Image (cartoon, rainbow, N blue to C red; front, side, top):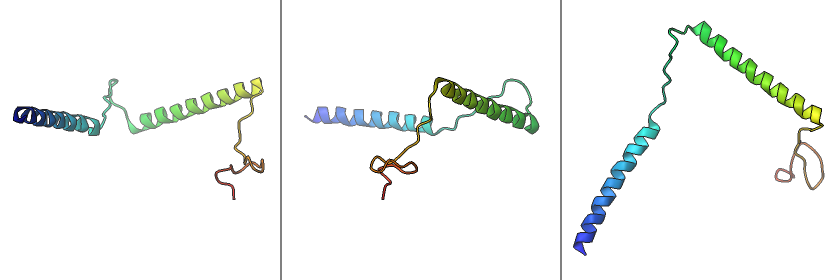
Length: 92
């Protein structure tokens, strides 16, 4: 009986150490390493702006395809009154 409690206590301490190590790994900040040399602030701003433009174009393209198929974006409405602008959860 005493032997099993000693073994359990040892196992608990090992699991706690492993849990602490895993927690430290999760908390660690992620750093990205740049591979193409020096990046100036202006170049970084251009890259971010281009990414925003690309995302906007993809969204517009997606909306265009939905309209071409006849899909209408779903607008939430109240089931009780059928009015748009609120739903049954926020209905007064």
